[in-house]
Each structure stands twice: as structure tokens, then as C-alpha cells.
Image 1 (tube, one colour):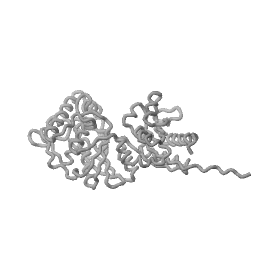
Image 2 (cartoon, rainbow, N blue to C red):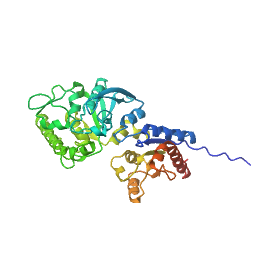
Image 3 (cartoon, rainbow, N blue to C red):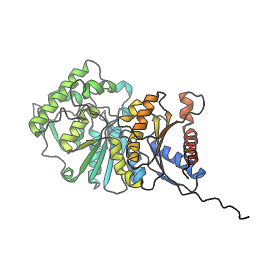
Image 4 (tube, helix red, strand yellow):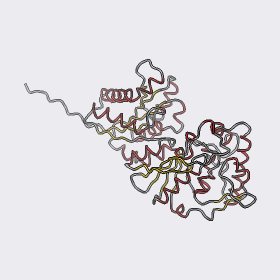
Length: 393
């Protein structure tokens, strides 16, 4: 009797596209942990690591890792005017830079007792952009999440040669509280390298610059503003928008996203001609996600928490929406997944095939954070075993 020879399994192609698991591991670390587990348990699988970001903290690392680029370390002006260690990313094409506002003008750089958007500045973010320009980059991606500022991007623009003048003809300080004194904008000294560069801004909010949903009213309190400061910051931004209208002939006050990062969205539009896009869309384009979905059998994404807010620009849903266009199933792993079936069904509707919690036993948050790598390894192996058991071999 002829011995039956087991049918050889078809090679699997699995893309790993997690965001960071906040408070525990970065997107790059998460994808590395997942890849190590899959290669050990499924040695014939083709595993592709594509850590992603929705445009906030972790954007530089995600894009540099995914494109084989490099981190450029530097020192810039921090949000309080002191020098801070910072960095920007040079992507694998050697022509695209990625800048994180959080790395130069971020809230994490300001001690809680000193948080005050009346006095913080975006100068350091402008200095990072300037370094990228001088390094020969002709495309710059700017992530504007996690800011400590409410200066409308004045500090950023000033670092790139634009002057903001008061009634005495002298330059005002690049702080949110100084915008009330702005009379004129002089862009004659604008860095000429900006003429030949494309600026993309990763922005996941649609707030206008001013008004009840604007930068000051919505976000300044998170950065240390008191109730007394809010009218001052609001009036400063209104004045700022009026001077931009008068001197540059541009209307930015009610543009969706202009209020992002304390008005940084408005500054990037007005002075750098930037376009604002959802952060995950920019990232997926930069890492050529669509092209890499060819012949892909499964995508595994994830982040610290999946909930009802995930459909509004969060990375796992952005990944799933694109993969669904190509008929590729997407498994999402997270520290916490929705317990409400109505929310889960919304995630299904966006392209996520199934959600899996990392937590596999009773434990508190501290224990989960300490064990996140082991939990992540276990979860992704179980996802692929289940996928194979369904006949996908």
C-alpha cells in the first residue's frame, strides 16, 4: 500500500502592522515581538513587519523602521525655550523626512508644574523642519500630536525665517500669550528651500482655529491653561487669523484641522502650504502598504485599546479599511477590546475580521503592562493557528 505523503502547506504571507501599545511598548517593538513568535512557530511563513502610527508619538520610529531609514539625533529649542534632545527621521528613500512635533514641542517635555500654553513655543519643531530641508529632503511628513503649545505655529514659522511684528515694529515672542500683540507678518525672509518641498501633515482632528471647538477652548486646558487664560488665548488666535488674512490673503480660521496642536495646523497651512491628512493614511502610503498587500493572506494589527473611538482615525481601523479593499482579512489584538457587541460590529464594518484581547487571565493593569511581550506572543500565535484551522493553509 502506497504511503500517503502529507500535502505541503502553501507558504503564508502575514503582514504585521501594529501601532504602539501605549505605556508599554512601541510599534516597532510590538512588530518585532510578533514577528519573532510567528517565525518560531511558523517557520515557512513569510512575515513582513510594518509598524504604523496614526500620526502621534511613535511616527518617526514607525516610518524609519518600516522603510529602512535612520534616526537623526539633534538638539533644538524645547517648548519652554531651553535646549532639549530631539530627533527626526530620514526615510529609506533618502529624500523624505519625518518630524514629530512631540519630540520638540511636546507636552511630555514640560514638567506638570510648568505647563502653561501662554508661554510655550513651537520653535523646536521649526528647527527640525529646517534641519531636514538643509539635509536635502524634498518631502517632509509632520506629525502634530502631543503638543504643549498654543502659539498657532508662530515659533515654527519664525525658525524658518518668517517675522511676526508688533505695533513697535519689533518681533513678538513666539508664545500663545503674545499673539494679542501681533500687527504684521513679514515673510520676505522665508527659507527658500521651502519652495521646492512637499509638506504633509498627519492630523486626525477637524477642529477649526477658533470658536467653541477651536484650539484654545478644547485643547489648551489639557496643556495647563486656566479658565482665566482661555479668553486671552482665544483672542490671540483670532487676531492671528486676521493678520494672516490681511498680510497673506489666506483664510485659515475655519479650515478643518487648523486648530490642531494649538493652531499648528493653521501655521503649517499658511506658511508652508501644507496639506492636512489623517495620519494613518500618510503612514500607509509612506510604507507602500497597498503594494505589500499583494499575495498577502493575513494582516495582524493592534494597539493598547480598541473602543468606539478607534473608527475615528486610529491606526488599526486605518489598516483594516485598506486591507478590506484587497480582500485581506485583518485580526486586531489589543490590551482591551470592546465588551459591547454594537461597538465590535462597527469595527467589523470597518474591515476588522476579529478582535482578540491580550489578557488571558485575571490581572491588573500593572501586571498586564509587565507581561505585554509574552501576552502578545501568545495572542498572535493563537490567531494564526485559528486562521489555519479554518482551512487557510
